[in-house]
Image (cartoon, rainbow over all chains, first blue to last red; front, side, top):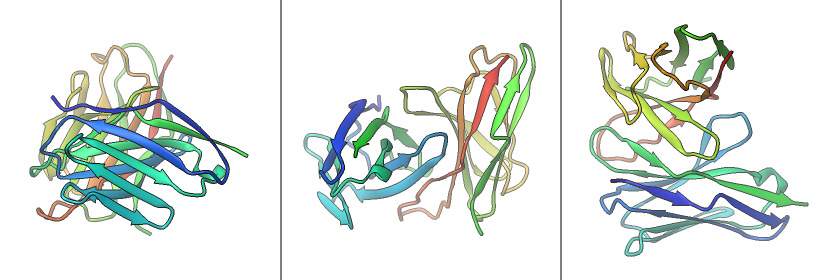
Length: 112
Length: 115
């Protein structure tokens, strides 16, 4: 079945780069997403990557996709205290339902 | 100002009581979704609806019911059959035009607590 895994916690210092990792199992994934959740709030889409790409950059965010290893990462450059949140990766398993499978989330703590 | 609204922000349920969580969107999106979030876990899909008057069970539908009488509204009822309802509930919506990526947009969530 489909499964998406992430490490639970990452702590970095302000100004450093953060790298959040995700592994997934469904090789038929069409799109892979990164969402950010601040305390007590809904999910905010940060970025996404199509499964036939291996990299996407959007300002401070860089997404790397290794389809062979089913590994996705999100790099945040120059991490700020406002980046502290839970980050979820999700895979779209395609088809008409646009169904997403979410990882368990990684709590990013940015130390000043 | 388009978006998804959920109400209430906090909801308390007594034993044996049914409660209904509201989700409204003015994005003219076709599909709507309900997820449940528990601490330390990802989101799990409860129900989804791709079109008015039609909906399908997700991965954890037992103890829940939904309706989709209007395109903009997708209320979720947590019935007394749901034995562990305490969680954070998130509603999402998306266009369904096929082919292109269709991002799911999320509401702010409703936190349900059992008294």
